[in-house]
Amino acid sequence: MRIARFTTGSGEPQYGVITGELDQFGQPAEDARIAAILSDPLYAGINPSGEEYALSDVRLLAPVIPRSKVVAIGKNYADHVSEMKGVTGGDAPKEPLFFLKPNTSVIGPGDTIVYPPQTSNLHFEGEVAVVIGRICKDVPTERAADVVFGYTLANDVSARDLQVSDGQWSRAKGFDTFCPLGPWIDTDLTFDEIAAGIPIQTFLNGDEKQNGSTSQLLFDIPTIIAHVTAAMTLLPGDVIITGTPAGVGPMQVGDEVEVTSARLGSLINKVGKK
Image (cartoon, rainbow, N blue to C red; front, side, top):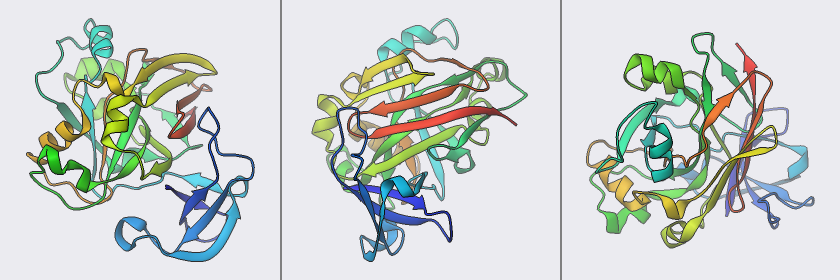
């Protein structure tokens, strides 16, 4: 099931279920539709409202607005660890390395990533994201699937120069608009499928920059969930972004960045000025 949050251009945002097949590039068919549901499925389940729209007639929003936090996993692809060694230093971590992005950093597909004046080196980082479906703490790896609502795409936008000068990552990765999410949540993906490999690519102005697979994760999702929940409680709607493969690089005002996966769709955002 593919669950999206959307607007028809009038009234409050709604949630809905996208119907129809995806093509080889993860794009919905031209005749795809979205069947509205009554309220946030994280809290109220899937209850159809009876209204239905052509997907082409609605605007997709961030599929989830975390009420609490975004947990970001750093250095979780070996090739990215290697490319960043001369920038932020360090070897691959011995256990999942995580930091927090504020929920105010979240935007949706089509929204503008704002290039803040405090940086001159703004980077994209395409990632697969996990949406948490229930309150959880101290989750063992064998129970991790019980707390996952589904999966979406993310762009861990990073002010690389601030990341280096600050010596920690909160400001560099926490500006408003620095966490695009979308375009929908896939609730059917399994840990086995992710371990086998979900492709993830990032394009900048149509040029491929990143091409990785979740089979390359240094720490798999059950391990990440167990490690994070050993430290803090996760709430419904919290998001874990799982790390980025090699190929990260700078964006400029006017650029378009696309994070895409044949299973999870395409998350497209342009870069603009404040």
